[in-house]
Image (tube, rainbow, N blue to C red):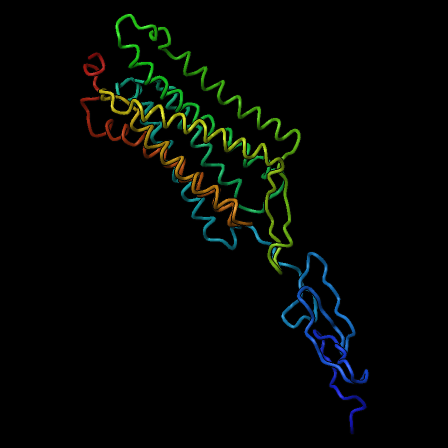
Length: 339
């Protein structure tokens, strides 16, 4: 039987496109545009899918978009981050235990040993914040992840800065009749930690009060995929958090570098210099990567930066002291302490 038209039927997934200068029975079949479908033959127009849906390969049916986030079920890197977080936390607990056991030795006691315990405990809590970055983000975890991380790391950096200032004052006070002697003790470093950490706590309270982080669905960046992520809320508060931590780390690095070569076997300045150098290097590289990534890539950058900077402080600042404790018994005896 002859066709009563000069074109074949357009299949589902296509639409009719009239050919200029021909009768209406002559047309071309054009594939539906991205984000559109047609589920009937010879469709005049294609229909747009809902925001949460995307056409299948044949563009004749809308299917739900894939929800993308750093998941325990689909991403091996999530378990890598968790492993290093737990492993680093266990190492920190062991270091704390050894330091408590040898707390009266000249390796642990100088330069305010309480600050060492504050740094180690805050580092442990910072590394455990990785659990808030992995899994499906919700409003609660979005609010807690940046606030907790910022406060705990600020306590770490405030304590490191207090240690550095203590080293500087200690060598200034060696001069007979020096006015720096009145600043020696635990009151100044403890006060510095409280005051410097309070600035970040205040920033966090204001952040949560006026523009807290929240769960966000990005439906436009990738076709066929919904990126489930955390919106920082107040960009100003977020960058103030990072900037304040960078300021504390930079000041500690500069002061520690200035006194790193002073002649004392228990001088921690060189260890602080290396640890702050690692911290600053990691975050200087991480921030551009954070700003240029989306979704699970952003979370991976944050998790890596937290682990790398935290472990850098542990390995550069505390493992040398731990090595001295375990391999040089003459440094932990009472006669050596009295000397």
